[in-house]
Length: 169
Image (tube, rainbow, N blue to C red):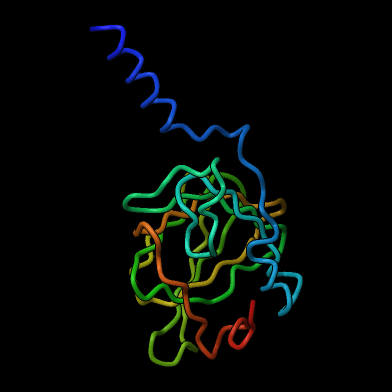
C-alpha cells in the first residue's frame, strides 16, 4: 500500500463518521408541532441526511445521504410523535432507550388503529403510505433511531385524524 492510498483511505473513513460528540439535539426543527400541544415537542439528532423535516444541507456535521436518512429522536416522558404519512418511503424505528408505543392507523379513515409497545433494541418498519404515530409510554425519556428510506423524502402529510392537520410551520 502506498502512502497516498493510505492517506486516501484515512480521508475516506474520516468522511464517513458522524461521532456522537459532534451531534446536538435540535429542538427547533419540529417546534412548529408544539402549536398543537407541548406533548409534541421533541428533538431530532441528525447523522445522515436531513430526514423529512426540512433543509439542513448547510450543516456540515451531517453526513450526506445517498439512499436513506438516519437520525435519533429524543421524546420526553408522555411525548407524542403525531400521526403522519410518508407516501414515498418506508420508515423504521429502533429503540435505544425507554418504551415507545407505535401505532399504525387505517389508511381509509384513520379511526381504526393497532398499537405495539417497543423497548430496548426493538424495531418496527412501517411501509410507505401507512399513517403512523408514536408515544413515549415509559418512565423516562425515549431515544430511538429513525431511518427513512430515501435520500430526501417528501414532506409527510397529516391526515384529518392527526392533531397536526392544518398546523403550519
